[in-house]
Length: 79
View 1 (spheres, rainbow, N blue to C red):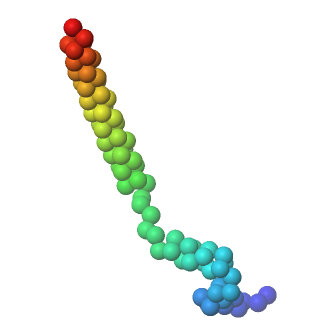
View 2: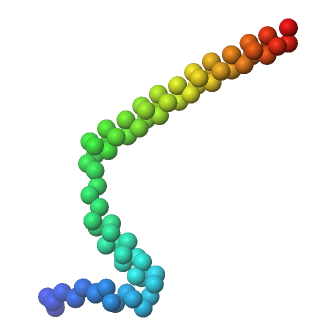
């Protein structure tokens, strides 16, 4: 058995093939990412769902109010 490690590829090894170069760069960037913990991810997910629900309810309320007002206005114009 050979205990020697393979030498790491240098950036210049990827310059001849654009696809390999792009994949190499993406992998290098993904290694730098600090992923959130499960607790933080859960809290942020709940926050996004709650805020989306509140905005949805607000939009539905405003739609109902303006719809009612428009119907009343049309009825007033028709009379």
